[in-house]
Image (cartoon, rainbow, N blue to C red; front, side, top):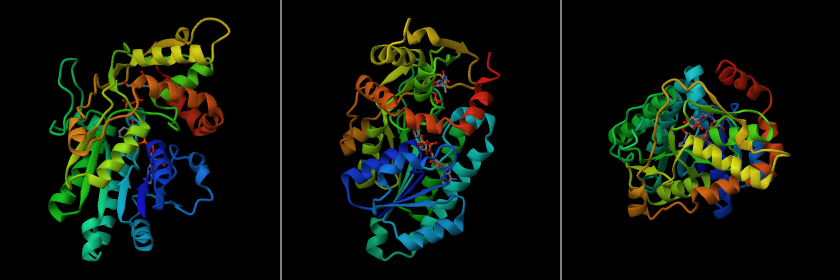
Length: 353
Ligand code: NAD
Ligand code: TYD
């Protein structure tokens, strides 16, 4: 089996669902179930013996040792993290704990387990670390895209702690020979994304008749990738990636935030028209994020050249699917937008002019 951490979160859950659709190899899903983890996302697997769920914190060494010893995974795919930049600005401590200390603890547990494996299993073992393009910092409008050799220059507590975890993973390969792989991916979107991130937040607010809060001038650029394409890239890297290497994953979809919000409004105008006017009328410019990175863009040619991966979705097809998914799954969105979420909305947006 494979051990997936953070498999009740947005990308991890999409990965587990996709994995079990394409393979009978079981998944041990290890997740602490923070505000971002939701077992409702995995309810189609409730009676599926191929999915074993363990509620545990990756910072808990004894729990990690026990899970490795009991389930004997052939690989780890490590998604678990605190993942939201705005939350990292309001409360960085959890980010240091989970992203740095948690990844360290998991690496230590994996190393101990791996060292004791028989030679053939030792050779076959993999530790795949899922990371972000935000570790590379911010680009100007004319800079080339991030490649695998771009130096790390993280600017937020989130990206700094992810960079810290990337460095630890690299060091465990270099120092101990642990068979690691790292992926650095651009912004994901798709089904089951928590409505604190741009795309689901805008859809939820639009449908609720609330303002659509665009930070600053709305001209910041992100390179968007449909989550199913990210999951496919991770499967390729896990199967065929070269040990110790990093792979950039991106959608070749650079968009300004305002363009994204306009496209979402236009899709909603078509699919669920308002009684009068357009969803665009709800756009409200608000105070910018402190230290807001201007532009992210990924050069994903290495992954295409070496492993043959290319995104299947364009931004247009992926976004249309995503909007439709949120329209069809409003119960899921309402469930996650409960108590804790409302407190977050007040923390992040209450004080913004
Ligand atoms: P998410 O916040 O939706 O999910 C994170 C999951 O990790 C949740 O289920 C949460 O309960 C779990 N978790 C948090 N702390 C934990 C701990 N201490 N122990 C065990 N589980 C814990 O995040 P996501 O958007 O699905 O991102 C997954 C990974 O992909 C992260 O490592 C993130 O840095 C990376 N990534 C995300 C994006 C993106 O656009 N969302 C892009 C590139 C890379
Ligand atoms: P986000 O989804 O938080 O991802 P990240 O910060 O990791 O790129 O934000 C994407 C972009 O959207 C980012 O430039 C910040 C901007 N943004 C807004 O303009 N308004 C919002 O309410 C949010 C959550 C994000």
